[in-house]
Image 1 (tube, rainbow, N blue to C red):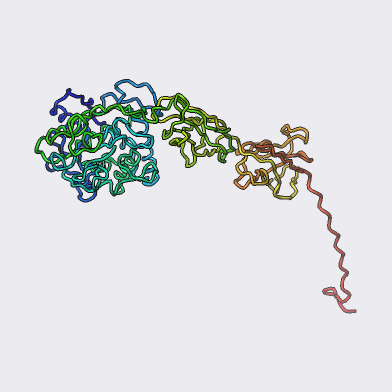
Image 2: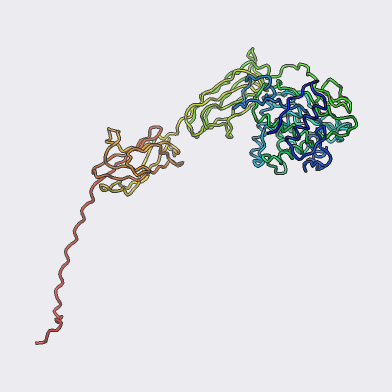
Length: 588
């Protein structure tokens, strides 16, 4: 198990103490990799092949250009695992670090789900994205993102001008980082523009690849880590992936520490309320040391060619970036103005097993005054013992409200499990009462049953019926597949009680059974019953088959002795031939 160290606090530890902690952590989590007293790779250490390769990404191939990163470590106290994310769950101070802003957490999980389909062999855990997001940007500066996942202001690292950091000239004409002279790491996952140019992804489906959008950045980070056919369930390959993101052993161990911490349990917190880190690796860069082997800086709130201390930017080379300044209070976001959810015309949610629900859940976000609020993320969650899902097989869906403040959940598809479950709507990033909708799945039905053969069903006492009963179930004229059915040998047309004599089925042990349950029609509505046998009782007997939905069919069975064989005509004797001469007789 990896070692843990308490999170460094402002003024509580010197650079030497911080370096010792990171060095000890490096020794415990990455055996065989040499580091110096500041946790940097010492001479002779072997960086990952990806990290040391030139070309994509610049800065020794790292996604971030080896910009500074947050060095705060997880608390010693591990978070309590929680089976589900619940906004507003009370947590102790020691567990505050386990809280991840709702939209940011959603972006990590959505990226994991996407990679599970596109690159299943990678085995990317969303907690790894969360760990990288923590050290790169403090989870998008505590979740300061809008309903679409875009940061309210750009998160930028220091200019990579070679003064204490890597030297990377401008590659994007300032399009992403606002700097036309040098590149800077950009966004929640701190991609440098040259890397984003080929690694960028559209994670929220808006048709754009924006490094300042947490959905786009998280998906891009996932693909970046999974390239080269890596399997991140293999520790060595995970280490190589992390080092390719930022070529520093200290960075590797910091990320692994947060990964382990998040794997032990996290919870969702409202957007904008996440815990902000306070220490950057840039604080440890001595003047004139050249490019830091580790990487993003304390983020800035907006592009600036001349960062000033105290505003979240970097200071002069050698002193490293300052801790993030407390941002000024921005106007309330649309999400923050929401007071409650209202139903937006959702109908009754009922469906037959295996069919789609004809109605969708729709809600409206409103202010206290009843005014609709647009661009708010609403989460729809299926709760209960059911195999029903939203279209696409998911049990959760997040939808942004339209200009009328309405969010409509994807269509519901009923599973095979009957009964009632709940569709719950909540506002992402707010602790508000949700709306619950009851949904009911009824069993598949048939309204008609017919025999598919006309062979008489007869048998001699103690014998076996030569033909099996074959049926077809339909509902409104169409084949009724997967419909439950029951077959019972009844006493009479007016008495549906199970008969105690006459024909019978056999169970798996060969015992007599006169009622069969748990029968199900095939996909085409057909049903073939097991073989029937007869005891010594003769007569006419009735077999009744019923299905869910009320379809009933009664079939006659006859048990009678075999008819006596008709005797054949006696043979006509043949008269002896007149020409025949008895053997040995003499001629008179």
